[in-house]
Structures are given as C-alpha cells and as structure tokens.
Image (cartoon, rainbow over all chains, first blue to last red):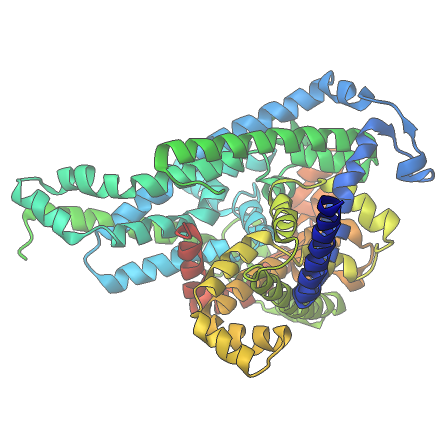
Length: 316
Length: 291
C-alpha cells in the first residue's frame, strides 16, 4: 500500500515538475513559435507532401484523395534514358567544377600572398570579389554577351587575331561544359580564396625563418611550410564541396542552356524543373526529388565522416 | 631584407599574372558598358570591344523611363528590406532561445537541424505554396518561404553564448522579460555579427529571381534580376521548344537596350560591394572556423 502511494505521489510530483518547467519555458516558446510555424508550413509540409511520389497526383483530387500507385513513378524514371542522361551530366559537370574550380582559389591565394605591395594585394582582392556579389542573371547575361557570335568580344578577338569565323559557343555541345566551368570559376574564385588567405595569414612566421635557416628556398618553404598550413582547410572545403555536389548549379545552367545543348548540359535540377513546373508531371518529379535527396544526404554523410577521420573536423 | 634576383623575377611574374586576372574580371564589364553606349552600326559590325564607338545614351533613358523597370527596382528594394529585417529578427530570437534551458530543447534542436539536410524538394514545395496556401501571385510567396536559415542560427547562437553571463544577470535583476533581453542586451552585444548576417540575407534577397518566375504571372511582381532575365534572355524564352529562333540573334532589336539593362541591374551592387565586402569576408572566415 505504502509503496503504491509513494509511486503515485512520485508521478504526481513528476507531472507537477513538468508543468512548472513548461510554464517557465513559455517565454522561450514565444520566441521560437513564429520561426517554427514558418518551417512547419514551408519546409515540413512539403516533406510530407513527397508522398505524392507514390500516388497518381491530380490537382483536383488533392494529395490525400489521389490514387495510390506505389513505386510506379520510380520505375518510370529509372527506366527512362533521359533520366540517366541528366544523371550523367550532373555527375560530370560537378566533377569538372571540382577538378578545375577547386584548386584555382588555392593557387590564387598563394600567388596573392607572395605580392610585396600590400596596397596592390588589397586592390586585387577587392576586385576578385566583384563577380561573387552580382547575381547569376547578371553573370549569365555577361557570358551570353561576350560569347555572342555577332557582337561578342571573344569572337571579335578570334576574328581579328586568328581570322576564325564567328562561333556560336552557347549553341555548341563541345563548348558548353567548359563555359559552365569557366563562368563558375569566374564568379566564385575570389570569395573562395578568402578561406585560404585567412589560413595563410595564420601560419607563424617563425616556421618560415626556421625553414630558411635550414637552407630551404622559397619553393621548398611553400612546399614544407605553406601547404601543410593549408592542409586542414583544404580538406574541410573539399569535403563540403563533395557534399553539395548534386544540389549546386541550377541557376547557372538554367540561365545559360538551350535545347541545342540539353544533351551535355541538362542536369537533374533543370530536368526536374522542366518536367515538374512546365509539364506538370508532379508525381514523377517528386519521385526524382526523393531520389536526389537520398543521394545528396548519403554524399553529405560520407563527406562528413571522411572529414572527421582525415581532418578531425565535422559538421555535426 | 635584401631580395635576390630570382625573387625579383618571380615578383614581376606574379604581378603580371595578377594583372591578367584583373583584366579577365574587368574586361567583360568594360565591353558591356561600351556596347551599351555605342552606335547601332558599330555594334552590328562587331567593332566594339573595350572602348565605345560613337556615343548614344538613348537606351539608358528608355529603361529609366520604363514603368516595368522602375516597378522592378522598387519591388527589389522593399522585398530586400522587409525580408532581411524579418530574417534577422527571427534568426536572433531563435538563436537566443536556443541558448536557454527549456522543456523540449532536444526536440526543437532537431526540428531546426533537420531542415539543413532534408527538404521536400522543388515540386512538393511548389504545390504547397500554389495549390494549398493559394499564394500564387502574392508577395507572401516571395518572402515567407525564404526567411529562415538554420546555418545562420547556428552561427549566431555561438556568438550569443560568448556574451558574459553577468550581463544577463543584471538584466534579470532589473526584471527584463525575454523580449527586452533579446533587443536591449543581446542585439547590441553582437552587433557586428548581426551586421554580417544582415548583409548575407540582403544579398541573397536582392539577387533572387527564381521565386518570381515560378510563383507570379504579372509584371507588377517582377524584381530587378527577373526583369534582366526577361530582357536579356527573351530570345531563349520565345524559343522554348523550337531551335530556329535562337539562331536569329542578329534580328533581335536594340542590343544597346539589353546591355544598358545589364549595367543598370548590376550597378547598385557593384557600387556598394567595396564598402561592405569586409563583412562578408569576416563572416565567411568566422563561419569556417566556428569549430
């Protein structure tokens, strides 16, 4: 008898504690509620909305009343050669971004660091940020203009120096991926170099003096002091880049591509847009979206694990 | 320290590379400015490279007088101001709340963290906003879905945790409530972080155009970037499914007009960024070394 009564007493006390803590927490909840509601409506509702990937979604019937079709749409796109074409383009284009776009800011930071004049350094650095600040619409407009076959500066140089007939670069499959890689580098290298410039500034000067006393020239100093100093930040950024491989690139490609280069330039995000928004294939594109999220999460997760193992740094 | 001959040669080589990189960034802008003010004949004979040929400001006048452009500029300005203001307030209140102890903190932490790694994707989000919330052709669709970024909440929370606890104790003794604490104690203590995060939000909102494209159908909702997209890429827009129109570039009228539009849309950012870039640089560095 006694034991039971202490138990009920305990649980009553626990409930009382809970309600006291709840009451105490109310002011904090008031701070959280607006943001949580926004996420509920604009983030969580769509997450639950992906159930339409398993339904034959009809706007008239709505999400709940549309007919259940199971994995039909997953099979549809996995057996569609168009999907594999955009999958291949996504991987190839992002791989090119990585091998060409990733090292460039490191080289730029190293070269900038070697300049003697601090004033010149500052000017170069500030101007290198410029393309980061303008939108992709502006950058894509610039790219279209300089590459234009009739009025573009590139064709005008090619004509006057090498006497080559105008080339319509943006309509030629063999140039399209290079244009994507170069314009992406053009827009981003300045801001990406910030990480490396900051790390370079934090390398201790004593290390260079010590290396110089040991007889190391500038090149050896760069190899044995500078690059090891950048090692961690390089690994961290490489990992983050790999983690976001599948999601990046929509605006750039969407603005620059056209039907003539779909074969080499169409990627998952642009394909999903055309099929979903323009052709209203809601269920099919949601199925693609789920697959993309899963692959993306796997990439982020793997990248994060790798980072923790190699650099001892991770996102979570 | 005395420089060796090799070091001197390398220095000149380095300067040459830097000037080359500078040219690659600046030349396209010079080219477009020149095109925008050159005469039509010079443009069509492909004679304009880095300096204008002839002089003709008509395109600028035409754009600045156009109702659509002025409306787009106005929309961009107020959407950026309102959006940034709301984003910063929400980030600040959530960040502060996450430094407190409260019932259900673990749940709330996951609630925010999950949004960094999972999303419904383009189509379900589009359906929720257009079919269920009926926000098509409203400014809400351009503002509300983009207000919260968990990443900035994490950054700001770590800054708030660095505020000395004694400051909060003083406020508590004075009987300040949570809202007063946020705006009178926390806000001034982390002003540099607030400034940096406001800049990041503002730049994103200023440069946004995709929501305008998918959630609105009328010119009254346009922003500057979307205006530019329509002006510059209209030849692609007409040519959505046929390839013929793309090849008729020579017939598109008013090259000056498109070039002047690029300059006018880029101008506000280009003239402001030298003064605010230091916030971005600091923000990026502190985000990277947050540990």
